[in-house]
Amino acid sequence: MAKPAVLLIGGLDPQGCAGIAADIATVQHHDCHPLPLITAMTEQSSAGLTALGAVNTNKLMAQYRNCKADFDIQAIKVGLIPDLIIAEKVKQILLDNPGIPVVMDPVLASSSGGKTVADGVRQYIRDELLQHLTLLTPNLPELSLLTDNLEDVEQATTILSQKGLQACLVKGGHADSEFATDFFISEQVRFYCYQTKYASDVRGTGCVLASAIASHLASGQDMRDAVVLAKTYVSRGIRQAQTVGSYRLIKHSHEPWALEDIPRLCYQKTLIGQQFNFPSCPSRLGIYPVVDNAEWVQKLVDIGIETIQLRVKDRDEKTTSQQIKQAVEYLGHKPVNFFVNDHWQIAIEQGAYGVHLGQEDLHDANLKQIVDAGLRLGISTHSYWELARALAVNPSYIALGPIFETTSKQMPFSPQGVERLKQWVTMLDGNYPIVAIGGINYERARLLKPTGVGSVAMITAITLADDYQKTTRDLLALWQ
Ligand SMILES: Cc1ncc(COP(=O)(O)OP(=O)(O)O)c(N)n1
Ligand SMILES: Cc1ncsc1CCOP(=O)(O)O
Ligand SMILES: [Mg+2]
Image (cartoon, rainbow, N blue to C red; front, side):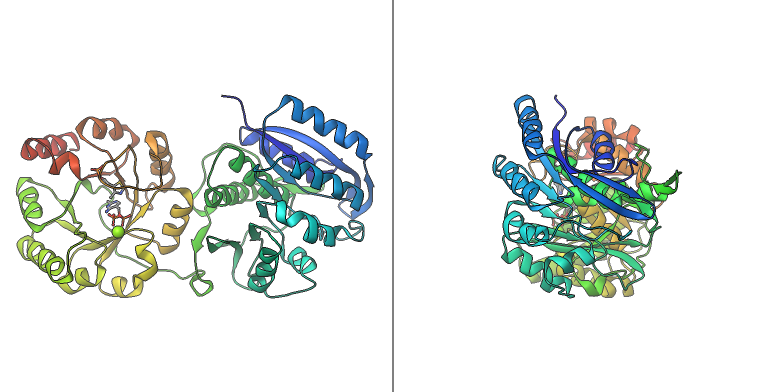
């Protein structure tokens, strides 16, 4: 398959640290093809930006037309716009590419200070370009410049949304905390991404972040995943930053991430940095049937199952409670890891071993109450941004699914596949047990064993098996 082409519109830093040079390196490391369109030549050094020379617009547009003629542009990243004449050309290019994701890093306030873009550019971005962007990634001073010095991030981003901006990622959105926190807002969702603060002396991080997001969007990733993946890339790059000349620069690499590289995600400001301490569960939870009544729990535990989940859906409160109670009473002191799906309050009341919650369930659940009651917590994930959300909660285990196509539940996620499972097992190894779920039967469990995953969960492979006893025994023997 052809590499997705990403059009990069921005300025040239002849020192190769920021702007188009950083964009090219990033896009290439994301297996996309960069199409660099230079808007301005800059003169800059560690002392700051001293000159800004806009290019000839006829040349710029001729170069753009050549790119358009030979490549199928899949995303656009916009950086430095030196003056209004170039700004108008950028608008023309955006209008020429309707439906293509556009990420703009508004280079208005650089940390090194010095010369800035021409008067009027800021207003042009706000009044003429915002409505054509998929995502704007300002830092706090840039957000303030774009909103006539509004200090409140949520208020400022709301104003930009009213101007037609689809989504905004404010970098360092809550600078006063002990964490580096970004704030993401779109019509559909708003969330905070936070991490322990990392070195702030690394150059070109804003360009790398925006072009990494553009590359992920060009490759068809969901916006939330694009943001989380790009932030992870930047964090790893900063953690491994290299000294080059007078600078510290991001290391572009394909090395595996460390767990601390992944941002933590939450939906409320008050939850930033809130830590939970759920009890641990075995690192290998083994064969993990998910069943819908207490009889199944008894039948499967009798065969030797040691981890099981009761997932009662669409039953009234009384029946649900009775089913959970019946299962707990049967299990008594048996060494079985008994998880209850969704109904965390009943699980606490009945003294279950743990609770399994999906991402939506997390909104309503009182996690502190679950921790205080001493129950373990498993969380579902189907994407990187859901992983970022799960990590913020610090659960007892993390489930990834659907690994394969499943008929048991309709969901908007495509199969994650064996390779992603392997990547997650390596990344989370020793920190969080992983449970694989979705379309897993005996043959597929055999396929998953080499990934090192400690547990495989299944519904239909057992509950719809012709001979559930044989199937369960075979699975248990396989997972020995
Ligand atoms: C082990 C395990 N993994 C994932 C799920 C799915 O849970 P959730 O996302 O809450 O969806 P429902 O099961 O409630 O439909 C699970 N139950 N168990
Ligand atoms: C609840 C759930 N969450 C992710 S996949 C899945 C269903 C798993 O069922 P099956 O094992 O029959 O595919
Ligand atoms: Mg659920």
